[in-house]
Length: 164
Length: 451
Image 1 (cartoon, each protein chain N blue to C red):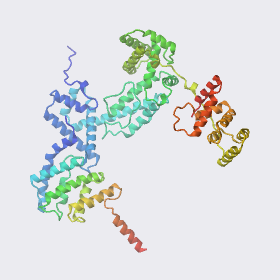
Image 2 (cartoon, rainbow over the protein chains, first blue to last red):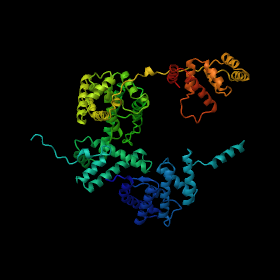
Image 3 (cartoon, one colour):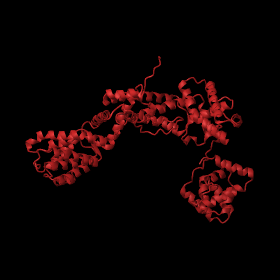
Image 4 (cartoon, rainbow over the protein chains, first blue to last red):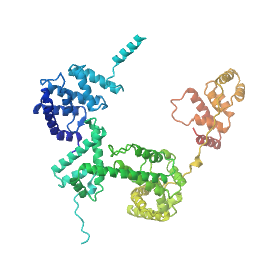
């Protein structure tokens, strides 16, 4: 009898996940964002490959619906780049789950991604991955707060010096 | 007609006690007691349980975990489920339980059972500590005191129920195999309890002397004490003497050897079994579990005696006691070294002397400790003749103490300095020049000194 967790979870959870994604269309339809069954299946496939590439497993629907609901009102997502952006975000999510040593909860990581994507990155996935998330993961690994920045510290120090 | 036995399909002996649940399902599937649909259903339930346990672990903050963590939790879950299924009357009943009860409910029952086993283990550990053997054997003390106590501190029945996370280094006469987690520790402690119970029939001094007879380094050896004691006790009975003092001597070995002379393996086995019965009678052993433990230990004793009979090496099985207090070593006080500056000026004074007699006079007057004397002899300021003259002024103990530190009997001399070699050479010459009796005394004194 097979009890290989990764293999078991992928086969049983896959069907369930597609349904959950399609159900999100009701919510995202308001923003003109809708995923087809094929795109939902592709998203689930991306989730599966990202999970196995990062040595993780996910039971249940997972975070796809959370990411969809959080990002659907982003000014940088349109129906033309919706599915593609979701795939990239999903890959980044699982990669940085490992990179942050699981120190950040799902909700906090998604929120950080959304804030950075909408503000400092102006909708650029590259900037989000290589600058913001990378910096945040480094901060967590070295025991700093996720948003800690050496630049802001230096500026503060300079301000203080100027006051004297 | 009253004894109609139920037909049981699954043979419990075929199942793996460590991975009970998995082997049970596999065996049931191979016998056709459950079909593919049942297996899938069980797998799904296990996955649901895993999901629930992971959610509890990360308090719902993360929907995904690393594969290795999930696999460990899955093994732990299945182990816990197996713990409950083992309580069923037979394996067929266990399959019925799986079919009618959700895996999560079986898990909960198993989890409670682990708590009960944990309490039992704590209780047995307390009893083990009560009849703890007074021995200097490191592994015995470290495993049974610190090791097991450590297990109770770090055992995690929720997520690592199948692990013990300590190394039970002290070997048992009947090793625990095919068990994991709390079941392993419980069985290990049970066995130790009976071993201690048996050893408690003898005085701890006798056991200590016996172990010293086994090896003078027994404190550091990873050996089972009960097995050595049982061997000797049975040896005493074979030799027709009382076993209580564990004292077996050459004459007793001779009697035992005569009894087993030209005997077949079966006959030797009978002799040993009879001796063990006599032993139980002499010690008045009534505990049936201890009797059973001794009985289960006998095959090892029998095979070692058969080997000894074949090779005529009874002295390796029926070991005589040795008394470490007779070989106790003594410590030589090398004295306190003088102040560095004073030492330097003394050495300078000695080297400036032209005649040996003057040198010896200064040495006698100014060097008061063997520690300083040792430094001086290693200075390379004195010739071999002068060193010999200095050694003539020492008493026997002092020379032996110096020779102990600079042992000329050591074979590997490649790393030694020229000064060291010179001193060793002088000491060797000095000691070998002595009369034979005197020389033996020198060497014996050297051996009796602590490093």
